[in-house]
Length: 487
Image 1 (cartoon, helix red, strand yellow):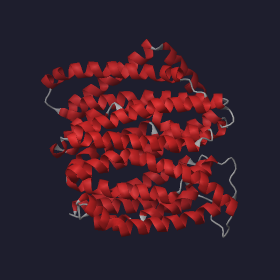
Image 2 (cartoon, helix red, strand yellow):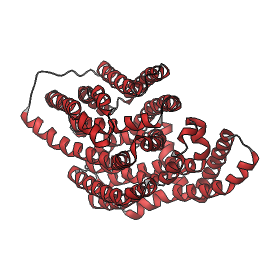
Image 3 (spheres, helix red, strand yellow):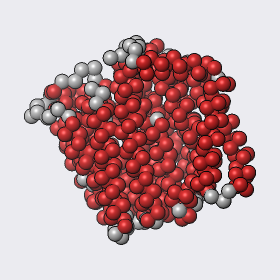
Image 4 (spheres, helix red, strand yellow):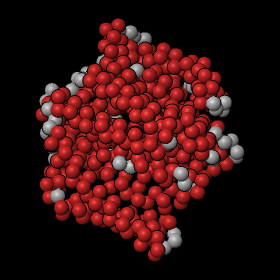
């Protein structure tokens, strides 16, 4: 099967899994938001910063490291598995023991029991890593899709049920634990690989070297995103952080449905082009173009309808999140570049570059956040958008150095959807006062705005940018027809 069609089918199954997981998860998140308080969400957000970072370190980048290998034998996979269990146990202990220190830092005593209950997630994720890598290498995204939907559904049902019975924040704790357990059970059920009592020191060194680079990159990328959450949680408390969490959750949902399925498949696909820089560059630009086409109208459109959508979905207690959403929506422009850097450079064998880029990004995020956060939440959020934009420019330059990607080619690929989305947003914003006069029903206003925006965006993109139309036709037609297309 040709590479493009593998990516197409893999992306389709990844989309099913991600969209299913995110849709179910988002619906249940909305239900929780209407039951629980912003402070509960803020405490949970702080706890998950610790869990996510230490779990990421514990997994040592082994999923990506194993997927990246041209060939994977049983000795290397078993070595990776046993190595990971040591890291998983260490990270679980680290979370448990550090809980009082984290609670003192944020002046939030509730973090102690919450973190200690969540600590086993670190070990559960290391147990899942190697069989997941096997499934990803074989483009087994159908099974990965099934497990994500099942885990999200079961975890969400448990959490909503507990919230209705008055368990408060512990409903969200239970959700995370159930999701991790279901993901673990299903990945082992669907994978034919089983660990052997084998150990290869050369494989351990090789995988640890690549994985360390990738896990450090993942840690730095996560830290880069979480710097603002840490600052707001520390300076303004869980209540304000909970409001910001609504904005991030809405954006996560959009990214997961519109872009993450493509990102999930991109490393598996681009790694096959590692010996052909020109093809690798071309594929990277195509991925960015498709992602921007899907992402820009949604992000800019949600900024217009946020005053109607937020109170309708979450309730009036979340009104502070409206401004946060509007400020952060332009970050989508940078995201279309930033999301594919790691996959492209990893495929090109430039994992060390990713590490240094991520380190520079964290330094920039810390400097901008420290400078802006004392002046309030809004300046801190603006600084976050500036940080992402600066890094996007740097990333385009890195792609040029690594695989010869021309910056002007990236611009040509992204300008049609960006210009169309900006014009759409301006028209919708100008028409909003008229809609407010026509109806008092927020849901009707949001639906009308979305319908007009989608039609206008499609019209602008199709009729004003014939080159974009031709490119999309060239890419999509052979995929739908099932023809063989070279990578």
